[in-house]
Image (cartoon, rainbow over all chains, first blue to last red; front, side):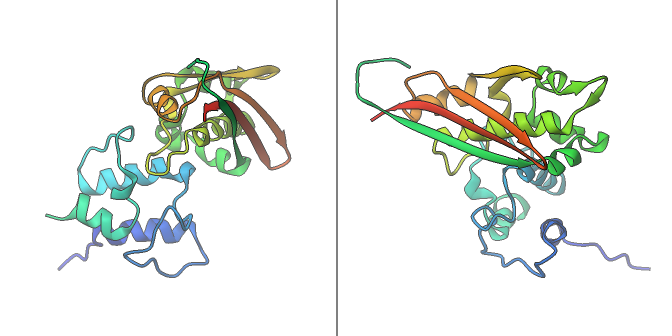
Amino acid sequence: MRQQTTAPIDQIKGWILAKHENRTDVAADEDLIDNRLVDSLSFVEFVFLIQELSGVEIDMDTLDIGDVRTLAAIQKRFLAG
Amino acid sequence: MSGSSPSVPRVGVDIVLISRAEDLVRPERRRVLSHMLRPEEIAACTRQGRLDPSAVAGFLAVKEAVFKLFHQRDRPVPWHSLRVDGGAGRWPVVQLDGTSAELAEAAGMKSEISVSVTHDGAYAVAVAATMIRS
């Protein structure tokens, strides 16, 4: 029996949507910070989630916000390859 | 952070819903909270052996208000290098080291930081003020 797995980027999108019940989708190029889908209080948990799903250790002191500003940027920087 | 060049005031303000701090003090979220507050800050937010969400919200609001003084858009809040010494009945005092000290220098901060925090109902609000080289 085949098991279906959810792609990491969809898990990240699901995490965002779970925190914003008024939303049904997040566009790949939507700015998560400027649109307050991720704010400073949820940011730490958000980065932990990316870290967990990508297996990439992220130093939050040196992190460039541009690398996590959109789902497309996260996919490119942390989940590609 | 001193000198004779002209300076201008700068303020930062932040508001934190105490219900969000209630979420952060849950045992399963302790890893996240520990990334935001230093052990001594967590100790200062502990009342009778339990983390007080209202105090946690106040500390987080102070840190975010201070971070706004740096005018940084592309950096996350450097939570641990922004140290808050405070607690029930004491005026909060902020000290910067590491990344926060570098950001303060880059922002042209030339004086100490003054902070004030208040709680009412569902919210904690903090204001931070300093002088910036113009």
